[in-house]
Amino acid sequence: MNLKQRLFSKSTEHRFHYQDDQLITQLCNTLMEWVPPKQTIVIVCIGTDRSTGDALGPLIGTLLQEHPLQNLTVYGTLDNPVHAVNLVEKLEAIQRAHPHACVIGIDACLGKVTSIGTIIVGQGPVKPGLAVKKQLPDVGHLHITGVVNVSGFMEYFVLQNTRLHLVMQMAKQIVALLVRFDQQFPYSYSNKNSFLPEWSNPSY
Image (cartoon, rainbow, N blue to C red):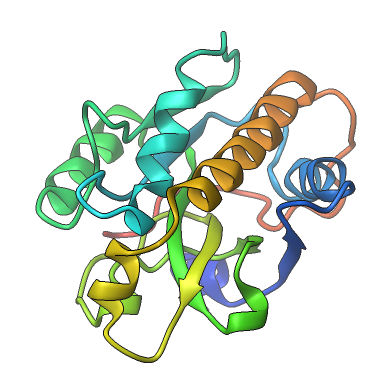
């Protein structure tokens, strides 16, 4: 099994509703266990503000800019988004700038009615464009996604008509999670359960 296969062979995910009091603590613990210590960490926030539901990623990137991050480098904001049109170009630039980084991809997604408002942290890449049947490169070694609306019918319309209030509240929770992770990394855990002992960016 090659390195890329080992990177993406696991599908472990942890899910919490954005209003769950345990979300930040539990998902921060998960990231601390999965990311090896002394690792360069790049956050790629995918999406566009031209669609309310798809604005989750760039909202997160913009809000993260308000914090003095020590360990995280962030790409994808409302002002400078990472989206379907420029994704390949942006990933190539990120790979050149951070060839050995742990990449965490962040994106909005659609799901079941009962899953709306769920924030997911998982192993393996985020798959941008999946909800609207677009063929785009996978992004990251780990992913954080937020279920912003229901899937299965007229996905473009659904994303465009997602409530901004929900997207903003979910973005704030993910930002709080990442700020907590940045503050604690790499001191609180021995990382015995790190999801990969040696990190290398996948081939985009």
